Length: 102
Image 1 (cartoon, one colour):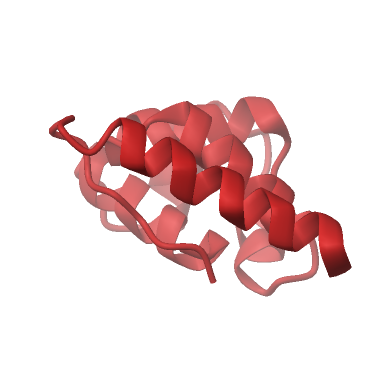
Image 2 (cartoon, rainbow, N blue to C red):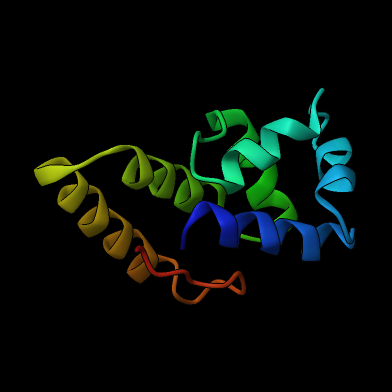
């Protein structure tokens, strides 16, 4: 999963059709933040990832690991990906969707 996919899933979960409406739903002060995230120029804070995950019906723990994957390179990134897969294996019986790292 990448940030664009999380934003799209959050929009579906929130039943909103625009990034502006999503920004309002998660109490962002500026629609520009979502545009910034979508463009890959920046990433949301941990608190906003949690809000987006809640709307997307994704476990926030998985979203936070994804955030670290997006932020990190090299061996640490590989370790975060392994941690994500381990966590997904543990929650596989949950009804929330399992998402693969990119």
